[in-house]
Image (cartoon, rainbow, N blue to C red):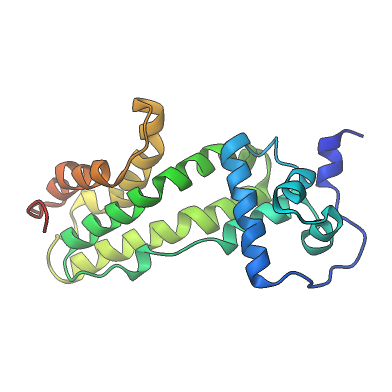
Length: 209
């Protein structure tokens, strides 16, 4: 049996809650840091235990397997900034969303790249990736557009409304591949003002507003 197969096994011992929420956050941070550094295939329970100074048996007892630990880390570390944005205008919302997404792109983009290939092989991991990293952002951006339509800022039949979230999140994932650098706050704000707002028929906010 390979070491990788061993990692996937579920520990037979019953699970007991011995890890505090604060300690769990430390472990989740270690897991995600290691994913960004080396990718999913290189992540091991032994490595997490060593990095976080936690017994491997404790990790197995609490989470059972590597996929379960990664899923828990994804769910347990999301900040959920986009749903809180509501400036009163769609242009303002999208500009603030660009700032929030750009501020986290140095953390989230490497994580997405590290997990994407493995997620295609694991339905459980793919589901967790979508639920923890993708769907909440899609829902928040779609809600911003919907509010803009309800306020009469954008026509309900404007075809660009369907693609706002795909544009903003897509360019964040794609820029490292196209240009070798992350889509930071400055870039994403310029993208919103130069590409998304004109397609929606909205004027870009004045710089600095």
